Length: 250
Image (cartoon, rainbow, N blue to C red; front, side, top):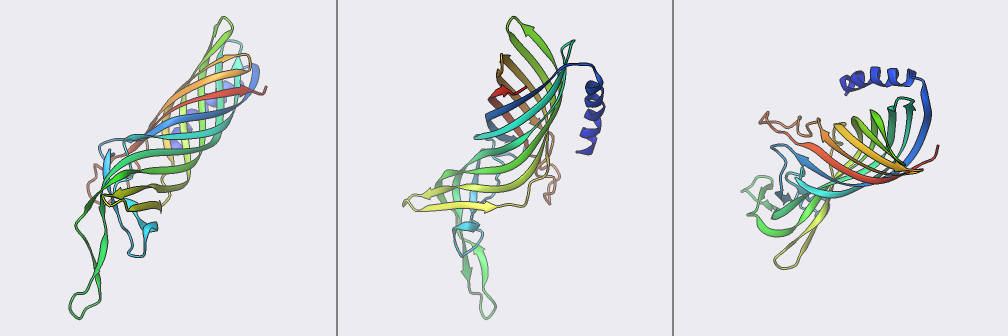
């Protein structure tokens, strides 16, 4: 993450040193579609029963779903705009990001007595279920950016390339699946905290007066599976499309 900050820092500093036409402070509310891409992301996986004591240990075998999940967030943004239209700014806020993966099987565990030795656990044959699991991340997102403003009659159009730095607060699998008899298996499994999610981001804001419509797409650079033991080619990275509304305070 440090190398990305070092790349952007000179751009931010040089922009702030420009004689700004004005300082703008904006609040935003966003919704979006979040998913994972890469060779290790998956549209379908199975649920594993992690403990014989009950549902709380149920978890997705591969939580990095390639299906979009509904996500949302809010942020505050501070930027300067020079007389020539050059923009430099920083946005920060809270986001709840969800990707989805379909579930087609449930793999339970059972206790098996083996002679005079201690009990051991072994997987039962899997059985079919239907449902999905969301991999849910709560994060603080920081978005440094530069850009340029185009004046289109009464509408201002800002093009804003930059990056996301997602500081993960909590990661968990959430959902439920149902077998052919209608029995429901709930999933609410807390995972080890995900790595800081660094993404390249391209955004655009069309504003009229104090109100704005914003959209952006972010492509993840962080491999969520970099610490997996085994095949070194494991790869799953995030992608996020945002759409939202903004209101300029200053």
